[in-house]
Length: 447
Ligand code: NAP
Ligand code: MG
Image (cartoon, rainbow, N blue to C red; front, side, top):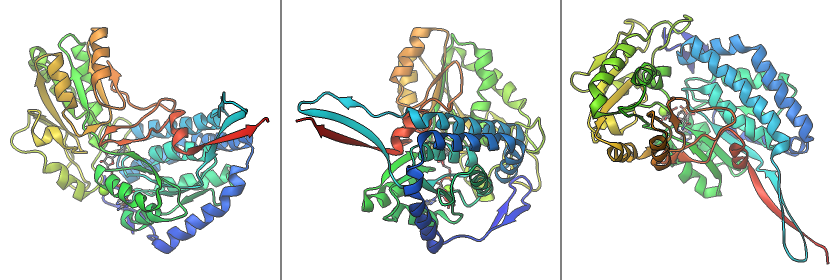
């Protein structure tokens, strides 16, 4: 299989696609490595993860270039992502010996809980943030003492392969981190059904997430699902409109909209709608679209020609604004703003491209109703100077991650994940440690 640069359509690498046999061999290796890895002293496991974090820092520019070329993402964004990858491994190095059990008062003895690793875990990641999302799963999985088989998306396997080399260089024993490059329907499916895989950590579409759940039923596998989103960016008339409008484009068009956290429904209070729309168009017009390798570029191409077709199919009629995009080679699509009503397809379905729907609302109750009118519930933002209103909204919106007067979604130390069809389970922070361990209760009789 040929790995492309989506900005130029030039081949970057040619790799052999693994099948069921290679997947089984990787699971067998991970299984053999498990007993020794789980027995590594916590401080030593922490030291190895810390060393991996340091190696990521030392290879910062190399990893950012690989990611930028393979995904077509602007190099500045890729650098930020690699910095986060290092922070994630530092965080989980620190988490190894802070994930405690409990003692529970009972009659006749001492009751205690232990956190046991699950065994071999299968990690399936998408193409939009290949390295970042790999680290969110690898960090807690390894910290808890599991061994892993990681399946990157077929379109973007390069950074995961380099990371696996760095893991070996860090001293993480052979067999603990395995990467298998191949099709989701072959390698992914096999991991889901494999009797020796205890858990699937999956990030991807809601559609494939449903297949993961179904497939996992056969072996009662644990699953964590990070799926799609259609998040609301709710702007009240009493907000700092200039700041909200200046940042809103980046909350949709970063990574060319190929972001599960994209705040792609921009809900604006009617009395401020015209003013906000004007500011938003100006801010979107100012985004720098072009060569991802250029330090100043803010938006690159989409991942593939097929994906561009899907994105284009969402835009009907004349948009409020359509930006510029390079012509010629590369899977370019312009930043696009569309005025919409809550029930429209563009306001309901995840586009996963640089298309935002602008929707007016009447008051707080109306904003809440529209925000929650979605199958998804991943992220979102609330912009207002009224703190009580912000907190009322934050408590009432059915979504896993919210920001007030900000569009940020992820930090190494805070839980990330979805409500409703955006999935379940949490990544990042100490919450992710729960998803990669089993609670064991032991009773010791004192009689
Ligand atoms: P996808 O099509 O669901 O693919 C995700 C991963 O699953 C890829 O590695 C893919 O492999 C694999 N896969 C495909 N079919 C499979 C099957 N039958 N069995 C097992 N694995 C299979 O998603 P995508 O198109 O790569 O990514 C876009 C989606 O991911 C969006 O919906 C986005 O919202 C979501 N996402 C969610 C989060 C989050 O944290 N909630 C973060 C990022 C993205 P191949 O591609 O190699 O076939
Ligand atoms: Mg796909």
